[in-house]
Image (cartoon, rainbow, N blue to C red; front, top):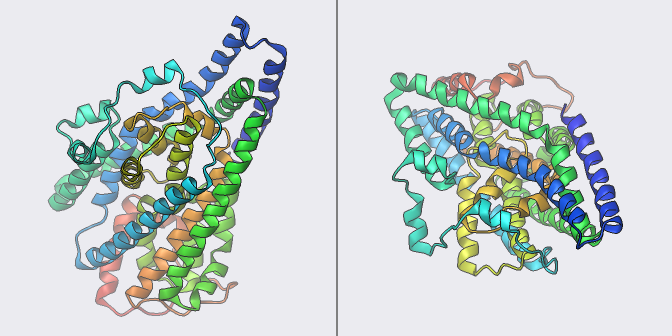
Length: 449
């Protein structure tokens, strides 16, 4: 299904360029017919964007509450979890800061001189610009239902943090609510799957509208954006692998060799989840015990999205540049912090970064319609950032295992280990069992398989 969707998106892109150009050269720009065509194209992408915004609040609420509740409260989980979160925060800061620096250096959106449509202002509403103190005050909700209704991502995250920790503290009494949060997350993932089936139509509408309005010259900007984004990802890979080499030393080269296959799966499908079973298997062979990877890797899938965070900062500032919106360094830092926090808890969602970017644009009074500009080529960008997420989580899991002194000798690449099937290490109830296994394993010395 994913490969067919990618094919349909490519077809939608090609048709969008052809139809958009045909409208531009055959319909007078000052005619009612031209306005009708533009509104028709915009309608297709606007419906999709509205549906994306629909899932923001419940998705973050469900996934983050369930993820925190599953962390457990044992000493072993606490220590490993603390180290994992510390690594994730460091990697997040590196990724998102690097994206911010490079997008300001390359300035891919400069010169587009796009104008904000009236409908975009109506969608966003009057969003008050915040200074640093107002921003901090604004983070903490006084009414979770109001925060949900307004899609206020940061306030939802704060509530989810308290709820997740509280459910962990009350233990068995909170299990029904944890299962409810998991069910909510699964429901939103299912809805997201349905929404993504409209992606080819949305891409067609987005590209057709952009080409009809601005001409084929916009395609040169897309080429520049993709090229500069991939150059930025190469820099990020070098940094992540370099930091990993400090801990793993020469074994970092082995790690790269072992994760090549899940990396290719992630790149070709643009889905981190598709690569997860193979990544478990290859980390087994690299020497990471399943009792470590079974906890750290799913946690990383929720909290360690290095490629997605670089993309979020890159795309947000690109949209501001495209609409000639000047952002001060303070505003950019606030956007950086917002993206860093709001990117947590939305793992496994196709095009999850679009959800984060949309919410952040609205919060900082930036044009939401700019997401349609990005979405037209999001498939190509998504492939690179998804592969980067896999690399980041492979390095993080291996480094934390080394930190714990539990990294074993690697097996030959063709060897097979008699481990449990990789899919059992997924999120949900099995995650709790893996955590309990890990606590048990801490009481007995590990043995080679």
